[in-house]
Amino acid sequence: MGRSDLLDVVSVLDVDTVLARSAAVGAEKTRAQGLVLAVVDEPAADDSEGRRVPTRLTLVRGLGEDEAGELRDRLGSSGLKGEPGARPEQDLARLSDPATGREVLRVPVVVGKRLYADLLLLAPPDGFFDDDDVEGVAVLGRVTGVAVRNALSYRLSERRREALELAAAVDRSVHPPYLIEEPLTRVAEGALSIAAARTAVVVAVTSDRIDVSAGAGVTDELLGRTMAEVTDHVRTAQHDGHEFLVRLADLTVWGIPLNPEHSFAGVVVLLLEHPHPGPSPDDRELLGSFVRHSSLVLDHAVLQQERQHAVLAADRDRIARDLHDGVIQRLYATALKLRAGIRSGDDSGGHGDEAVREIGDSIRDIRGTVFELERGRPASLRSDVLALAKEYESVLGFVPVVRSWGPVDSLVGQALADQATVVLREALSNCARHAGAGRVEIDVAVDGGWFSLWVTDDGRGMTGTELPGSGLRNLRARATALGGDLDVQGADPGTVLQWRVPLEG
Image (cartoon, rainbow, N blue to C red; front, side, top):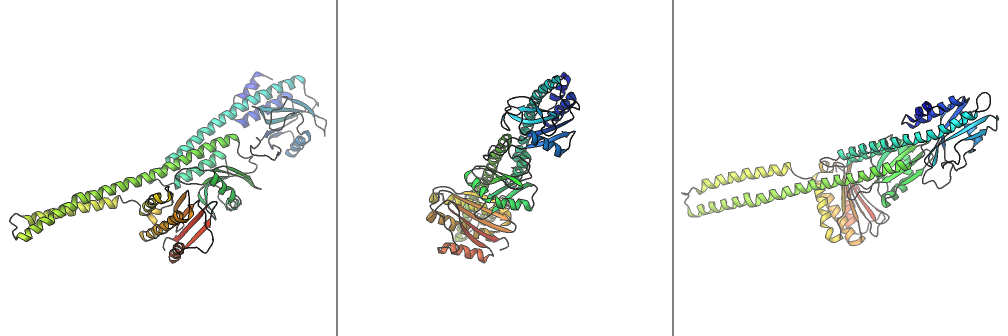
């Protein structure tokens, strides 16, 4: 085996090219009549059933695909003393094809401690391989293992670079008014690219359904059927924060939960098409880091949104103080001057003219203040929900988590916002009086022409269609009057209350 042949193999940083060049050099130098190159998939870390590690034929020459498969079946693991996926005990084996008696060279390509690829070379026309050629091919196999390791390291570094770019795209999606719909979409797109998946969605599970908040890739009827099959897995992952892997007939479903402190609690779900072997350790590392980073970004978006609302609220307080300390006091002083002039019947001091001027000044100040209030007015519903959550801190012993979805601030009118705050107050009162909850989550959402309010607690729980207590019956009556409904379902643990009405109601 010449030095130039080996350099030709190690001079590239693409795994498929390395293997193809190595197989071609080996076949040429041994005058092999045919070759079969197969890549051995990495065993799944969660596969406890002891299934055979699959192989994929990537290059066949000198015989058909079916013949290549039959040859591999006949040889089995001959010459590979270790278990599939583990390091073989010898570098090269000279075998005999049981069907034809021809000699076959088995050249394992070992990377680290596992078998990465398996090259079969069929004997030349004279029926046997030359000893010198066999020795050269053994060297080629070892060099190929080193070249593949280098190419895999380069591929991993490139994937890490791409993952960092995708994470940066999530960062850039956070901007005023700090809504999380765009970051969630970037999370789905990034997960799709990192995992090379068919579909990626970001979902959240309520008591009775899965809500898809963002998606990327192929979104068809197969997605809906698959999500229905893995609902329980998604719910468990969302609750306990652990990923899951489910192998179905047509797909492998991989779920990684988002774990933010303040924002969206959900799961990134990936659909991997067969024959995808499932996530490798590198996949788990890259996607796990990406999802953890995205959770922090979502938290940052929510905190920025709340900071923005706090700044606007502080601005309103300042304007209110300006009205009280400046304009109102001036009008009060003006009234005293007018009263004094009226009582004395003497306006020789020009009190009336001065009062008119001061009233005009006050009117201009009030107009300016009103303009500032209209221009910087915060979103009423979200502000009211946050204020209610803070108000119930002393009763509950903690501040409920608040999340909003969709254009709540712009599409929910004042009348509906007033109804929603009444409903929320009653729900929080029930959590405080009856549930004994240690955590309460409030979600307000606008989607598909509907407004929804969810209040989820981890307390004692309550189920049933007949709702005890006049408070909940009143909430149902309010929803019905607006063309909507009230649904109360048990959770594990606790209760989920959903109040849902159409926006036009």
